[in-house]
Length: 362
Image 1 (cartoon, rainbow, N blue to C red):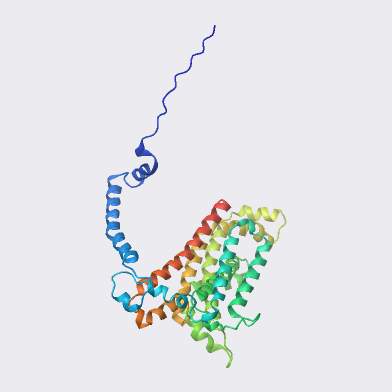
Image 2 (cartoon, rainbow, N blue to C red):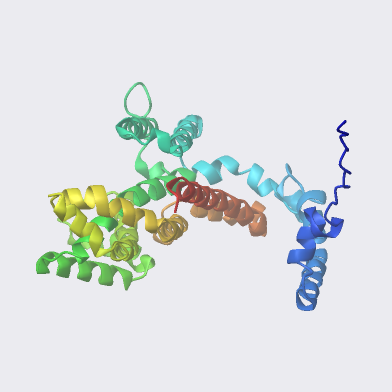
């Protein structure tokens, strides 16, 4: 008779508590050596000296809805400079009773970006949706039809002007940069020379000087009585400047494509246009996603330089607010608010690029 013997069960041995979870991560990353332990303790001490006073200033002793005189009597932050002047800081001189129009336009823009984030929507229909959205935003902002009062571009200010310069500047600069990169690698001497001169000339000049030239010098070359909108001139300067930097990044991606890809395209009988559109550029642009997004983020922040030529973007409307004697001395709170808005825009672009890299498998 066969007897079945139950095998002895061994007790499951768990890893030490100090090696897993939060404690394990802290031990492995912050206290894994004497030097790292000392640096961690010093950082914690500095945070102890900075964070509690900042929280007390920003959230405990602060004022959110008060006058400037009341703010001057407190030791905390005066967020009233933001809450009391929020509409002017965001929309500037846009007519007070029509400010719902830029709000709706910004909502449409955010919705378009959110819809575009999903690569499953990257079809021909997406282009039509963007064109329709831009047309609707233009109608809302300018008016003059459908019973909307007309608002001149000179009254477009605040965050509306910042987003306008950023959106159209980045959208137009990227394809122009790709064309310049292809031109610099062209075998045609004239096209290559023109591309090289443009790229090196623009990259050797600061954006501020280009903005000054567009604002001060360019009108001198126009016939008498002919004027070009100041916002359009600044927009062209930003596009030209950003495109030169994008061109060099894309050129680096093109150089990273092996000769075998070109030979494979030639063996299939593809011409130059199809080779670039179907084989070379999809690979090259995927390689240069990180540096391209870095340049676009820099361009987004550089739009604040238009304050120098007198355009009332988000930075300028904030400065005008702080010029009011009632709110003088509260620039820290106002610029912190502006910094948060810029951070949200840059962080969104960074997140999108990371998602795009992950989806493309780079």
